Amino acid sequence: MKTRSFFLSLLLLAVLAAAMGGCAAVNPTIATLDKAKTLSAEGRYAEAADLDFDCTETNEGCGQLYLVTGDACYRLAMAADAAGRKEAAKNRYACTADRLEAGIARTTGWASTDMRARYYENLCEALRNWQDLESGKSARIITRRLSAASERFLAKHPGHPAAAYFWVSARFAAAAPELLDQTDPEKLCVRLNQMIRDLEEASGKAGGTRYEENHRRLLIDIKGAKQAVAGCR
Image (tube, rainbow, N blue to C red; front, side, top):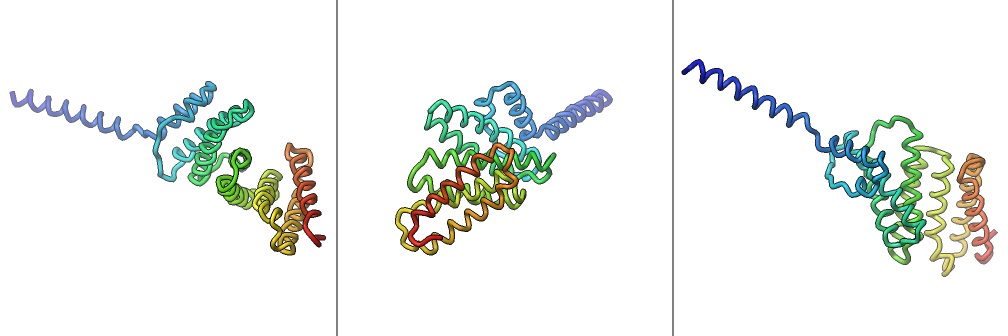
């Protein structure tokens, strides 16, 4: 009887150890990340974007999860925007911005700098497009986020044509109220001239990229606005 009890105890301990080992091996962040990757690979972006998760640890699993689901939100936002579904686009752009900002912040080891630049580019594009769908105070808040994001982008990737474009674009959008009021034309002129210099300096690297036309048009817009400022040379 004692021998039987002894072996039964060993069996129970073995089962418990296996169960505990199994629980320890399951990382909910990694499990959700794998699911998000699978859904995205299958083109099921809505399901990937709507996955419920909560991770705050600064590890690769958490950062990647935010990036993958943020990319799904970005694809949905662009599709909704192209289809003229404004409210759906705004919601998905907001998701994109929140997820990609969190993902970039939580990712310390990148497979390549090009990959990091691509996520920054999508983040800034989402903020720029979202800004254009809003107005008033809401638009100004997004403009400030775009300015901050593009500054971080430029700091990590100096001279990148997308970073420079979004950075100057955000500053030009922020100057819109002053262009209307012109309470301090001299100061406004200094700001516009600095935008022009920054954009012209970066435009050399924009040649041959998809941002070449964006640089050209933004430069024309800023120079046109400058002409409307009294005494601005």
